[in-house]
Length: 88
Image (cartoon, rainbow, N blue to C red; front, side):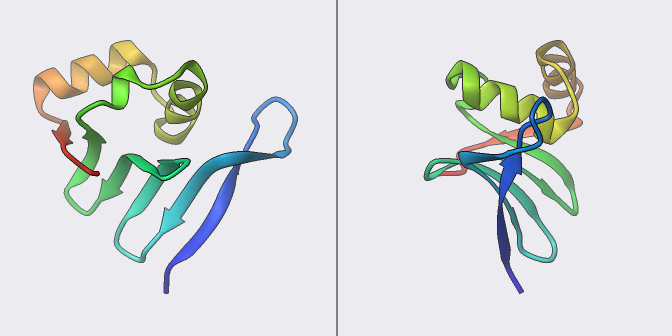
């Protein structure tokens, strides 16, 4: 069963409009508006090809989703622990 929920603000605890976590059973997906930004799959973390070029707000919630910062993303992509694919 697929479930969709709004992300919540770490600061206020309130739901955030247009920032979603989608759970499909084997994947957990971060979607901003209608764009898939990243997902966790059984094989690991996958970023959309433009994931690091999105808005400040989308990047903020991507950091929250991954619990990582941009330097860690770059290192993960470089060492192959994060894959990059066209998710849209």
